[in-house]
Length: 444
Ligand SMILES: Nc1ncnc2c1ncn2[C@@H]1O[C@H](COP(=O)(O)OP(=O)(O)OP(=O)(O)O)[C@@H](O)[C@H]1O
Ligand SMILES: O=P(O)(O)OC[C@H]1O[C@](O)(CO)[C@@H](O)[C@@H]1O
Ligand SMILES: [Mg+2]
Image (cartoon, rainbow, N blue to C red; front, side):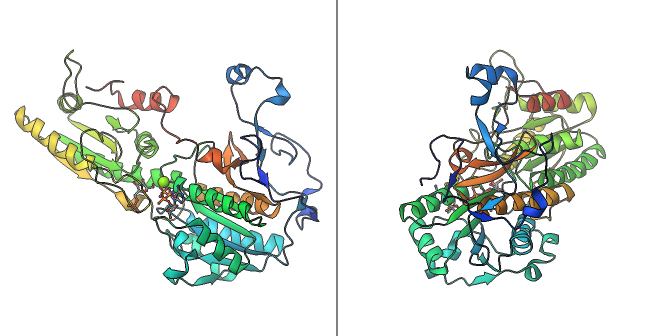
């Protein structure tokens, strides 16, 4: 078995699932409906007629993703299985919900009694760090979902996948759940490859986490909704500040390294922003040679017309204007501080024009990702955890669980890391931003 399988949509399996699932009584009477996709069915990749037609293949050959959900037959014997869960990368609301959901589902529905928590991301597998391995039970994870962060700890930084698999073998792990972002999923695929090279029967299932919402083939990542709702609260306070002083300008910098979803959604959630700047849509500060106004004069204009202006900027926007600061332990770009740069340039531009301004700059930063999951994300996390456990128990591997066109699906990890999900400047989300803000499609 090689991760990825013959087709790019196909999910790799460890072998034939021969054991009756303990969930059989719950699922055997289910009937196919618009709300239930049978395990033998597929969720179509395309949801638009023209894209499906462009493939030029009969309907039954259209590409599809395996649906999530419990299988009638499972691969692992729950009484013999030892499972592990690890959380990696930056924080994200809902990590603890996923950990608790996985433990509860393994324990209560499948009867798995040996579940381990790996401490501090991939580091926890590496002997030289000396991290303890936790025993997780429903009792030990009860209530953790009420806290932000991750009770397991997390980290960035490269670890040798051979050493990780050595550890999995030493511990006798059959199923590994990796909760993390794109980097973690790259790591998970490398682990799955080493597992396959060694001919081991270890399932590696990912539960994609990222407040940036930058993983493709999933509608949204968990925690994203909580994060942008929290970011919208910051915009609300900046709006109050800007509207309560003459010539008020509010500037909010939000996370979003390469994808501007948090900035776009948070701005729409408040519907008070005048300008939204994202990494996907370049902008200029000064007016261009053809007289097209740049951001600085547009903000001045808005203040003159409406008395105040609100600018929401994603941290990854305007990186051509500020020097980067190298890379972090995982190799991710450490971005230049576009927020502080814009603050300075806006203040200078008002001063040069002889116009008064009261500028308030807020960077809520880690406050948006360290909070507990909201109600929507709590449900989403729990259901993703269930889907991940079902997939792993059925022997699926080198895959991530996600929701595609509103249905739970299995996505080959290779596909999930094949590109980055970004705000499409031609898409309807960005159009909504342009409609709500009234900002021109091209700035500078
Ligand atoms: N190409 C890769 N191969 C193996 N491991 C990787 C790779 N990229 C990243 N990792 C590992 O995955 C872990 C998490 O990666 P990273 O710090 O990039 O966060 P992430 O999972 O992308 O989450 P986020 O960016 O949302 O915070 C780190 O331990 C990192 O070393
Ligand atoms: O400071 P840290 O923990 O490395 O993480 C910051 C990054 O992590 C994220 O929250 C998720 O990738 C980004 O939005 C942000 O740039
Ligand atoms: Mg990442």
